[in-house]
Length: 234
Image (cartoon, rainbow, N blue to C red):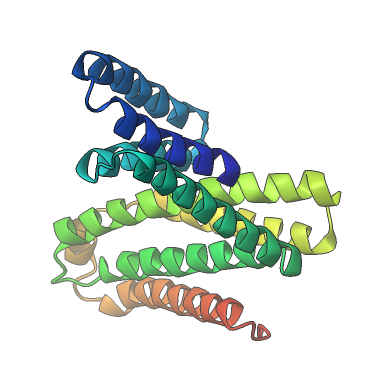
């Protein structure tokens, strides 16, 4: 994916510079190129990032035009930068093959913790529930994106490593996070009605709020432990 992105970015930039002075050729070919790059996004998250890189290269190329040998030098430098980044990425992946997955799980833990914290805030009688619900929807989009990344990485690691113990543990952790989110999404309440019915027994509602807060705090601590590679305390 990195190699393809490097080729597309350098090639798109060079094409824009070569054809810009020939308007009758520039507009139809660039239109086709933009359409082609946009359609790459249907092949998944990684293809979407490659597509975005190519589209960004076209946009930047039209704003920073070069002529003569300079356009080829610029394209080669961009391609060389892509190869250098790919080399660094592959090197770190060899030295620490599971680190990316661990950081993604840590980020998923952090966002899920934040979501549960918002669920706890809904139990407050004076809470602005419309604003909290909006924040929850934004978080769901971020969490679902990380879920897609983890599914792709964990499934690929499982086929490459033959289902190693470490990969299985991370897969179980990911499944648990998905179940926590699905359980939270499937249980919704009319908090206004609940506060009216339990107006004289606020300790009952506080119990549910504290449960959400405690789970959120625990997930947040686990996220920090994973990031700094600290042993998890059960």
